[in-house]
Image 1: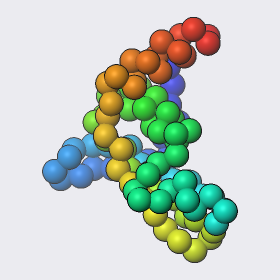
Image 2: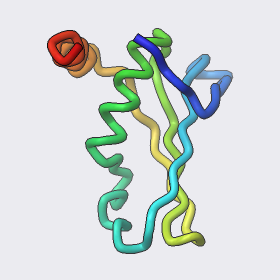
Image 3: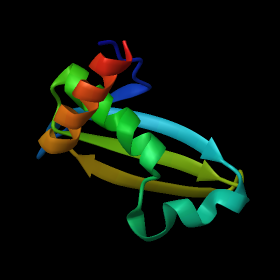
Image 4: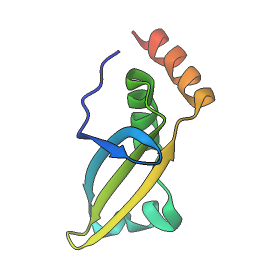
Length: 91
């Protein structure tokens, strides 16, 4: 398994985590409402957390070129396990 991280974060309280940056159009703004992260990116982050062993990721998105939003995603072992099985079947 491989991962192509946008960056790494060192948080004094949480330790080391993943940083991912995205852009999207204003038409997709609702997908990021209420501190949500779209499913496609959640799966990407779960994969990256599996590869790195880190406990959290921060995903930041620029919406419509002028609105910055970010959310923190915690490691989810159940999701990671399911994803690994799906990836193994795919390959």
